[in-house]
Length: 206
Image (cartoon, rainbow, N blue to C red):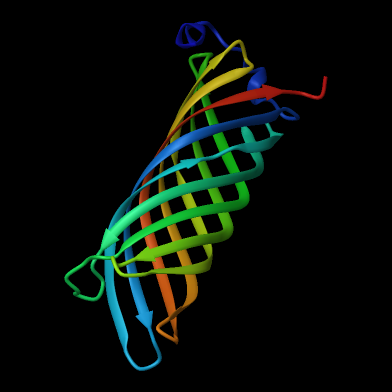
């Protein structure tokens, strides 16, 4: 595959009216701040974690070098923290499915390469399991994320590109779960650096 990317690509890949379809796989190192309110007290803390995700997308070039479309993020993650100063740090496992618009602005150079700036917004739901060694609590959460950052693409035959991108992501979520008969609301803010490697295909209606 890498041998195919040494040839000269044509600028037609980034022309107005073309479609872009592809996917990437990413790795995230995240830092999370958490505020827990049970009605009488408020606890604050945080944790760190790791995350892998798959990002399929479909876009349309509204003008030359500018694509706008719809993307999806499927994320699987786990983290461990100690937000309430207990001896046993709780273990959290998440699966997230997000949908939202994305855009890219390409700056082509050298015939078969381009630097781009990409941004994506996602909205979705998360199913979370939290275990402290004695019991497991489950929560359904709604969340929003925004990510943006630069990337680099190299093209083959004006139809395929291999991409890498570094993004800064910000996420916000709210959830409510029942703990020992009492409702507990959780507000979570997450910042993360995301490194994604992917492949995209370009085609037109003809």
